Length: 271
Image (cartoon, rainbow, N blue to C red):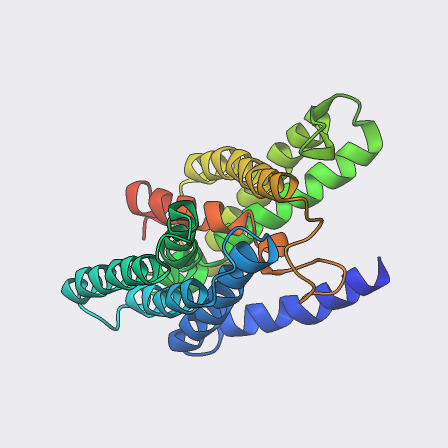
């Protein structure tokens, strides 16, 4: 527990420094690095696709997706690189002379495109208008849900939500996570209103809390399902006490793109 707290105490300020202070391109670089590690964890650590060439191709594609999300490349180049990526995967499949299962190629495609596309929603949020304020929303949703679910689950959790996938999760804890997310989003809306003078939609903040919290829980369970199916405890050991990138940022891969969608469809800040 001490190691877990120490890593969080060091890592959180660094992440906040990158997201709130440093140039936006630094965030793109950080997300690209995280995505490459996530590709390795999903393919190699799970044993789902340990082909070296698949991992290299997927890692390179992940880097491109992250910088494409930053806005450094026109959308036409996105189509070009997508085609090149699939051609590379097909060549790797053909070169194996039928020994490489097609399922592994599909998993590699998911790792190289979907994971970085989801994670780099953080970069896309950052480059929006009010991006420095909006970027905290997915972090608040993830932190509030995890913390609320943990403490409420310990205090009164009795009914198991998914005993096979995640034995410690309870329905009471999930309810606590949702209520915590609503409360923290409302408080953040209050800070934006009273502290920075923005006109804020409080109803939108509450909606973000509800949908965001449920999404965090579903994302966590999804990655737990992958771990159970592949027989691993953690995706990695990069973050002592936390596991790998996919262990710590599993819910972020779904709540960040959700926040992006909500901000585009129902902005929390009116002006």
